[in-house]
Image 1 (cartoon, one colour):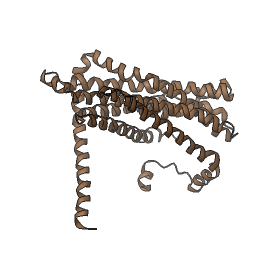
Image 2 (cartoon, helix red, strand yellow):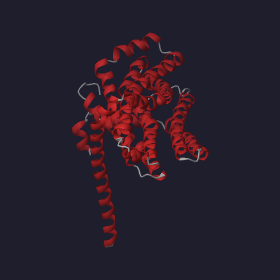
Image 3 (cartoon, helix red, strand yellow):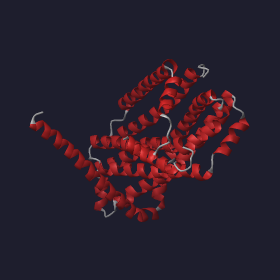
Image 4 (cartoon, one colour):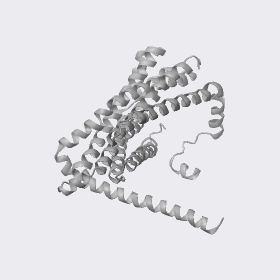
Length: 96
Length: 268
């Protein structure tokens, strides 16, 4: 794997500084927990949209296919919009 | 492990491998057939324009709103990270480069695969379920020229335009957050962006990428629809396969294209 990747893309960053900087710069409290909170909120939103659109779909083949498309569109928009709102609230006051 | 368990596992691996290889071969022949029937389809340009409307114009809302939000988040998080190194003024070039090179084509492609791609697969699959495709063949109308090729070319044509719209909306969103909300200087934002983004390597490579993604996603969508089992379950499974396969194809092709495009520039 390493050899294969190395054949095509090697930038040659120092391994120690890569992992060390990552450990030094990422904190458990604001960064990882906020990521977990975000993903849970997205999970709630997407699952709700999916089950609602399925329950609400017209009981024909076209109706189901329209509902699937509506699920994808609505869920993607909900994720991106919620992401912006959550980011504003989470990281705006972090003063980083 | 007992011998028949090993045989069972080996048989399943063998069947899966054979299935995927024969599907790959079928898809390649299907692609060649679509290209062969394309001139006949493109001569009746109304058919293709109708598909550009269905897969391009109807995806415009989701693409624009998503681009706006992605740009706004990029502005927030990018300013946060850049400001740690005192480089908050470079927000414009950061946002512009990441949108034009990567996020524009990739996220627009993923949204295109899930919005337009799944709709194309479901439509063709439903036509097959209701035996409309068989009826066309009975009337000596070639479904490849009448149904498949226009949808393929509609997707190929609309994908680069959607990616461009996504990038534009993203830059606008980053402008709102960076300049209006955080207070990066207006002139610095646009000046840095203009100075740091070149038309040749950056914008053209983004266009090439989005064209390649358009070809891949449209081909996967029409193929899965044409190949679907003509039942309700078959169509829904094909739709899922389109979204999964299209997204994977986009991300994998993006890596390969990025390596070839930006490796020699000394910027990556």
